[in-house]
Amino acid sequence: MRIFDPHIHMTSRTTDDYTRMAAAGVRAVVEPAFWLGQPRTNPGSFTDYFDSLIGWEPYRAGNFGIRHHATIALNPKEAGDPRCRPVLDLLPRYLDKDGVVAVGEIGYDSMTPEEDEVFAAQLALAVEHDLPALVHTPHRDKARGTRRSLEVVAESGIPPGRVAIDHLNEVTVDLVHDSGCWMGFSIYPGTKMSPPRMVEIMRTHGLERMLVNSAADWGVSDPLLTLETGKAMLAAGYTDDDVDRVLWRNPAEFYGQSGRLDLSAVGDAGPAFEGSSILRGGS
Ligand SMILES: [Zn+2]
Image 1 (tube, rainbow, N blue to C red):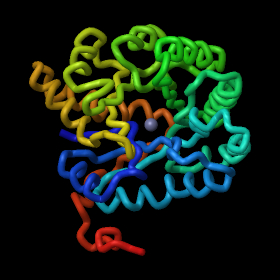
Image 2: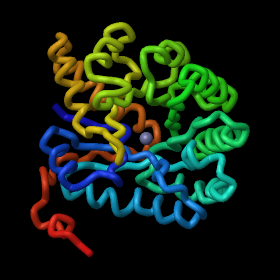
Image 3: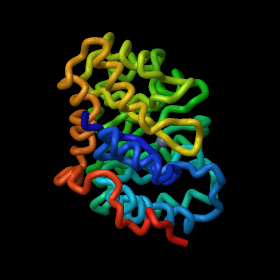
């Protein structure tokens, strides 16, 4: 099974995770820019973070034979903080970089007027830079947040086929299915979406425009839940080709719309490159 995780925060994961992911068949990932837990107090913190997403983290992933791309944006959690607002001015230069395959994660956290403005401004940047957009849906009041996100997407003029609406569940999937946007699902241990529930959603909504991710960050999460979803699909009677479609070809098609997705020579380095300075530990 070859796996492309379209939404995973590797910055907060260890080399043990990379080793397990490579062994499980993960050959490509997209890491969206997001909140780091501790509020950032100035745009310079974002510059360093964005540079790490397009420089250091792809290098780290490459040592395990995993291709790493990023999405860049001012995330919903910090979009309402006036100290972070100037980050919008930094984005154009990152959106021109080779390893950046979408604008994201954008969208709502608390659905404030400030978040409205930042969301719309970043969708306009996606249109201007001819990039897809990755939209996070809020954890609270998810149905209203999803509906409102779809309205803002429609107003922006970006084609729905270039937008992924993420962190969906049984309550929100219909809205997004009908909109023509891609449907993203974050599979978590214990909470939110599980592999069996995900299989049930595929049974009722098909495999087209479906994206499955682990979203793994520093919270309780598991970067191998993509693999577990693939196994649950096979156990439910889906074919290897169906699994490949959901776990590889769908994310490749979605991010391929950027014209920058490079999956050539994926997997050539094989798992855990022994000579890596990372594995010996640095500073
Ligand atoms: Zn995320």
